[in-house]
Length: 433
Image (cartoon, rainbow, N blue to C red; front, side):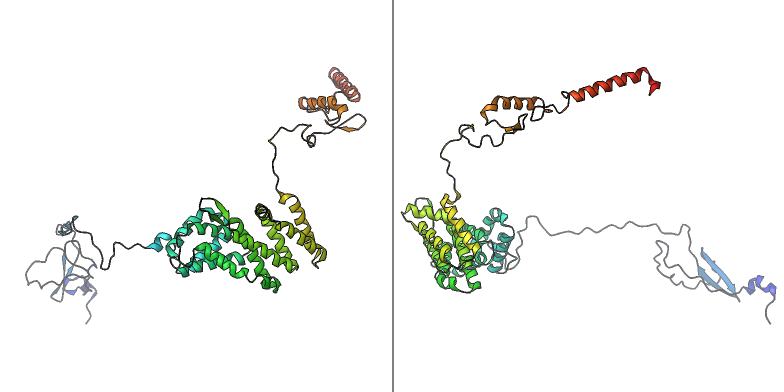
């Protein structure tokens, strides 16, 4: 039989419920975590602990733990860190790892070239940098030379350096001048001096190899001639920029390069095709004045012979019209002393007596008849000076002496008087308008 409706209100008929789940975390100080610790069964007749709910079902008792906020909560404790006694001492000797060498110096780090595994890559990168930014030469050449002094320590490395610079100067357009400056600097600042020759000697030997093939190169195909012309212009830049210090400290040019340029010109004029003649014109425009001065000091007439050969080419050779025009311009340039102007007298203030262009920048005025005159005309010098002074004091005056304001024009004066009289009449009779 099922219990009646009043049975739920009787203690003996309490419906058994599921026990409350313990909290996931225990109150501080209890040492519990997750679930409550199991308790030993309480003897019968012992009163229940505070905070314990006792349920009776069918004569049995179930004990359920609940949180107690009473004074049973443990107080938090302050953790004290343990003191560790160290055996280290400030007076201990300095530690060195095994294999440490105190005298070792990393030269690649000091030179800034540790990122380059080979000399070729480092030099080629610097040459390309100079090609793109030639203005960096003055600020970076010293560091470049210092790096090479620590890297180029063998004959093979020095020959490799010479070849890299030579190839850059003869294969990259417009690098011949920068390459010649670079060669001049390195010839004075590289410290290596092997038995095979220093930097300048190896450079001249490399140029001699190309120089000996000049006749075949001038007669070769277009590609061969183009390479030969690049070599010719590089040799011309070397002649102008490569400085050789004498025993007494004087600076001179390489004599062997002067002789070489003379023979290169002969090879070019002996094969008078257009590109050979254009190369000869560039060479003479670049070095003509210096070569002629050097030949004159020795009493030679080599430049006169060159000009004579040019005139013969213009008359006889089957070159283009433009090339012949270039050759004639070169002859004209040489007749004007290569465009050089020598100042023979001290500076004097320009006057009409010593300067024929004295009146070039003076203004021009006109007479009433429309005839122009300047300060150079003796009949109008007084009138000219008067107009100049009037122009400075009265900027409204024109060159012919009339006033731009119109104050001297009779027609404008008459019109102005009529305008004033009309304005006064309007003030007296305002309703007459």
